[in-house]
Image 1 (cartoon, rainbow, N blue to C red):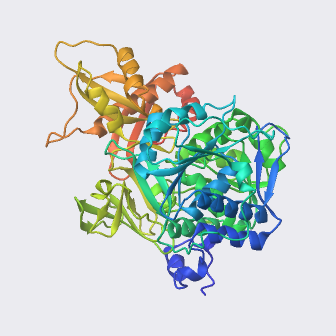
Image 2: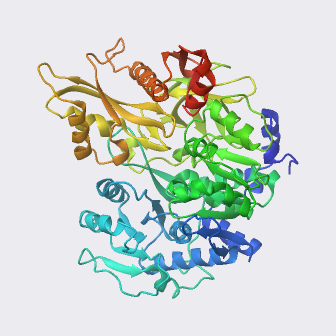
Image 3: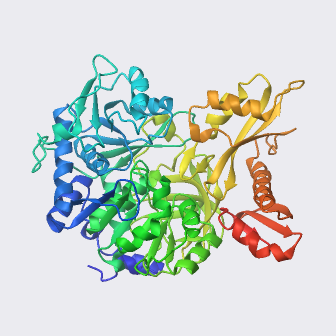
Length: 623
C-alpha cells in the first residue's frame, strides 16, 4: 500500500501516488449498514452521538455509544422488514435532526431505500416527492403541541396511494401508548419506540446481501423539468465519499464535531453521518433544528469549548452569522478546521473568519449527484484563492466544450468549460428517466452544469453555472416553479426567474416580468398571487421587477446573465443604502471569475464599512 495519506494530498502527483493502492484496500466499506456495524464493533462504548434538546448553554446531553447506534440501526431495519419493506421499497423520512433520525435513516437503507425529505416543504411538494418514489412507509413525528407536521401528514396521505404505514416518533419522555387515529382507513399507524424494542439487534432478519450498486437513498433535488427530481444514490457512492471525507481530516484524529446541518440534505448525511462513523468520531447534534435554532447560534462558542470541538461542517450563511457572535470567555483554541460547502464561499468572508478565530476554513465542492463531494482540500493544503482544490482520488474531473450530449473537446489550462465528472461518487441517475436525457455526456461523463477552469496544478475554479438553477441556502430551486405559474397570470406576457445574490442565503429567487400591452398590476399583487400558486415556499420570489423587454440572445433565447447583473447591482445598492453608504455599482461577466461587481464609493472614508457589509456576497467585489 502506498504510504501517501489522504490528508497530505497537496499536489496532483500525490493523488496519483495515492491511487496506486486499489480503492477497495483503502476504503473497504461498500454499504452504510456494514460500515456502521463495524464501527459498533471497533469503537464499542465510545460516544457516537450526543443530542442537545434545546441548545441552551450547559444543558444535559443525551448520549449514545457506537454499540448502541449499531444496535438501533439493526432494530430499525428489522422493524421495517416486519412491516413488509424490501430492498426496492422507499421509506420516506419527514423528521428534524434527532437521534432517531440517524437510526431510521441508516435502518431504512438497510431494509430498503431511505428517502429523507425536508419537513419544511409544503404538503403539496412533499406529496409529489413521495409519489415519485412510490413511498411505502413514512416515518415522522407523533402529534405534539410543538410541531405541525402531523397536520401536514394528514393533509398529504389521501393523495399517496402507495403509502401503507406511518411510523411515529415521539419527542416526549412520557410513556404514552395512545396513537392518533389514522387519517386513512387502510393506513397502519405504528409507534416507533414500542415496536423497536420487539426487534432483535444482532442480525438482519431479512438476510439481505449488499453490494455497492444497490440504491441506498432517494434524494430530492431541484431540476429544470418543473417536477420533483429524485437522485438515486448508491451504497457504494455514499460510503466511498463518507470514508474519504473522514480521511481528508485524518490529521485531526478522532475528535468531537458539532452537527448543525440538516439530515435531509446530502451535506449533513455525509459530513455529519457516514464520515463520523467511518472514523469513530463523536458528533453533537445541535437540537432538532440545528443551525436554524437561535439558541445554537447564540451559544455556539460555548458548545465548541464545552465539547472540545476540533472541527465542524457548515455553510457560508452560518459562517457569516457566527462571525458576528461574541466569543465571551469561551476558549475555542481546540477548534482547528471548518469545512464549508453547499454554496460558494465568498473570499472576504473566508479571510475574515480565519483571521478572527485563527482557524482554517476548507471550501469544498459537490452536489447531491456526487454523493456530496467532488473536491475537499485536505489537511494543511494551501489552495489558490477562489479555488475548490484538486479532484478526489479515484475520480476524474475535466472541463470541456460540449454540444448537447456530445463532448467536443477537453478545455486547456485556464480555459473555462462545463465541469464533467466520473467516479464511484457519481450517482446512478434520476428516478424519472426523462430527467436523464441531458446529464450524461458521451454516455460516461456526468454534466454538473457548473462552469469552471483548471489551473496548471489541477485546482478547479468555478465561475458560473450552465444549468438553470437558483441555489438558496444550499437548496436547489427550479426557475420553472416560478416562471410557469407567473406566466399564466392574465396580465403577464413573459416572466423570468433568476437568483439574486444574497449575503445570507447565497441567492434568493426574484422575477423579472414583462406585462401585456394595456395591462396594469402592482408587484405586491403579483407577490400575493405567487404565494397562492407556487407550491414550494422557498421558491416564492423575494421581489418582482417590471421590465420593458426581456434581454435575448442572437437566437432569441432569454439571456439570464444580463438579468443577474441587474439583480446584483440592485442587491448591493440596497445593502449599502441601508447603511447610508452612497456608491455607483457596475457589474461585468468575466470568463474565468464569473460575475464581478465594481463599487465606486462617494466617500472613501466608508471603505472598510462597505467591505465588511458586503463580505458575504458570493461574488468578487472590487472597490
